[in-house]
Image 1 (cartoon, helix red, strand yellow):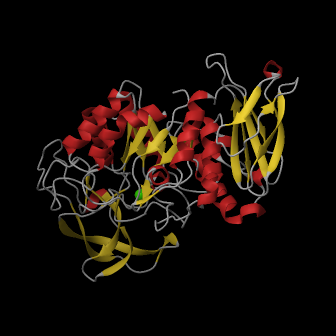
Image 2 (cartoon, rainbow, N blue to C red):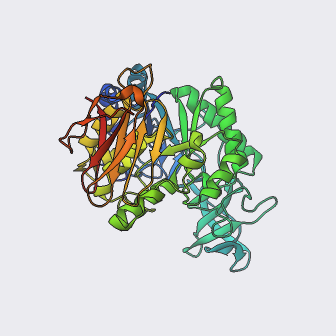
Image 3 (tube, rainbow, N blue to C red):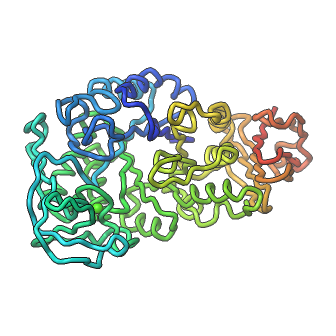
Length: 480
Ligand code: CA
């Protein structure tokens, strides 16, 4: 989709009031008017408790429909409310992308005993004890749902590891022992083998499990009309499974189904390997770009801005890059906290929303609120969304040629009369940069859309101008 923008419609600290689906329904028209083309919704199925964000997955088939775990609704509302929100978004032409957690489950209904062996958290290939019988809550009967939608019941054989021995009360990483059991090989090699992340790790080498999850994916996509999945924790899942799962669901949707994976690693080579291993079937979030933003924001004027796009996905594999500034994992207080400091956020959003490459994401916490505190960035994000919709077209020239002041030019295209822009950002003092739009633009008068710079620039005979920017700020120059 031309100049598509994804909106991550949740943050970690939303109240557990069951109101998110209703709010989203009411917000659909506004999001469309702002230029949002897809909404990424949180894991919408039953977790181990009502207040959970959805990543502690209990029952993938219960989207707030059955009385399980002491609640019908999830943190975000009921299934009926979710369906109404989806209908409202579709009416506005907005795609709906479901956060999909297939790495682990938790909150099993009954404990089971089985053989397991503890392993070293820093090297999961290293055993730290003897094989012994342990007990964990690995039996999932789904008593509130019964056999509705699926009669598959989960047992210890469907998992490869657990984080708890109920017999001794010991918390550790236990690899389940048995015929055909073991960590998946197609996972990230951090900590020796990063198959295990948390809870009951799903055994994605087990054919019955893969069949059930494929069945679920097809069911969920068809039942709710989802337009794509955001695949959680793919770093910890066998890439062969992930690839086949997406291929299966996509085929069931007539070949059209979006997929982006969360491979949360700053290591570009690992991301590129995943893209190759999954034959390009999934996009990935550009975690390296996020970490560059984080570093730049922390180091302030000391960061060399000409390196801002170095070793990023958006530079190396732009057609698979989903660009973001912050998300629910990087926000303050979360597991992977690496939040971008406030002063830098407008600069980062300016870059991801106006550059040619990448599929940008706007984070709920940056647009609305985080932990009920209103974001100071909504005005600039609205303005940049407007700039993306009206001006961010055509070829691009990068001017990443100075340690504190960098910029880019979009030359505009015939389809969007008057389009084209010049973005300039500085992480230090006020700066200026000569950038060229092309001879056809000679004599035009340009202004800064952000209002940070009051002057007007007249383009010279080459269509160039010396565009200024204020200290630690951005300017978005467009034709007056
Ligand atoms: Ca795993």
